[in-house]
Image (cartoon, rainbow, N blue to C red; front, side, top):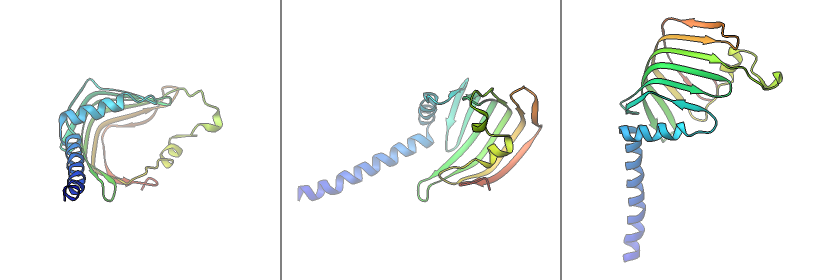
Length: 170
């Protein structure tokens, strides 16, 4: 009898703990800061922000965001975004994203020329994600993309978009 109760209690306890952890991660500032800290510790890229506040589900605010890897540096003055993550079926919904100025700067690449993307169009066409991402409302006040020679390739004063991406840009 005790074994039957234990067999029911343990999975229920694990499910409750999992749901609580998921709720904490998406709907608390400490969960958002923990996740941002985990991203900052990635060895494949550098990520930093002057400040992080809010939560992922209702609206995460970041100022002075800097992302850098071997091929690109992205500077964002300020950004606010709300994300909804569905487990069944797995998908991500970017409910809104509001951003100040975004500067994207291509870095000098030391890889052989045959391994480099030829241009921005090929890079965008190569975007794929393992799960669908639905973008509902994105507004960017300014976007600038500089090539490796620091010459402007794209300069947009105001950008608004929505769409989806999964296996390929839709």
